[in-house]
Length: 101
Image 1: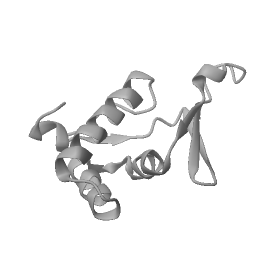
Image 2 (image 1 turned 30 degrees about the vertical axis):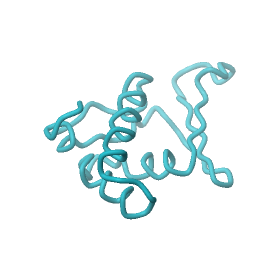
Image 3 (image 1 turned 45 degrees about the horizontal axis):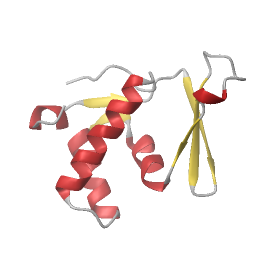
């Protein structure tokens, strides 16, 4: 990613991952792996949880970035870098379905 075209992509949460909100965090884990594998359990902070919620396959990364900028004290540039890094990580662990354009 890292370019304007990347921000026009849409991503959706992979249905093989489930999540549960606990206080200010969201726990995400794959249901296709051994549930005893603690390395496959991911904890998202408040911002990560909000991004996870917004990754619905309908919103572009640009739209998600704009929501984050509007809800948190962060610049467009900071939000873009953090969002792209987060999406790359979620993609690497298989938590996101392939992007659509």
